[in-house]
Length: 203
Image (tube, rainbow, N blue to C red; front, top):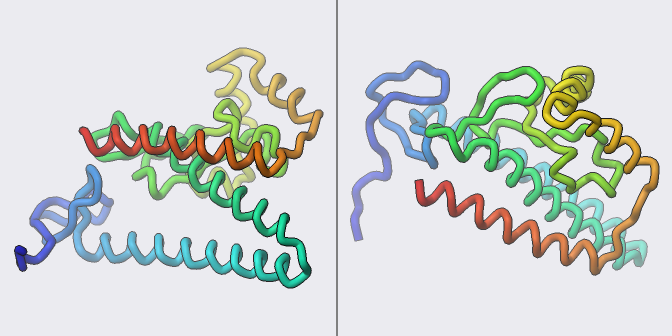
């Protein structure tokens, strides 16, 4: 087994302007070691925070005897994870650096640094995992600007005239998926995610 260090030398693709620096190749992007550590730290922190929230909620539900609700919440979390990755990775698969562009402001970043923004908010589970209702957004548009809805609606109309109103109409009839429906949807989304991930690996 090779004992060579797992780094190369190149130009950092992540905005620090590093030239001929030691770093790591992640997907299509080359990270200098500082950028790589910052990226991994952010990922670990986000995952740890999410896991902590899930555990707290799950423990609370279990302690109250709500085993079905605990299972349902776990399914929802897994669905959100798969759906978000599909939206962001699909938008980045054609870019050699795996970047994707925010739908509402145009800023481009690596797909892992972008978010999955919903036109009709995620509280509406009928549209929560509907690809017509989700696009790539940067954190500023999705969180700080509450989705930048005016631009979002305009772009959706340009893509498909009348789509925003169709989505609003669907949202007027709330629907709660059964656990079996959530399980089947998760199977479907995991299959789609594997296809998208395969496209990245074969490029």
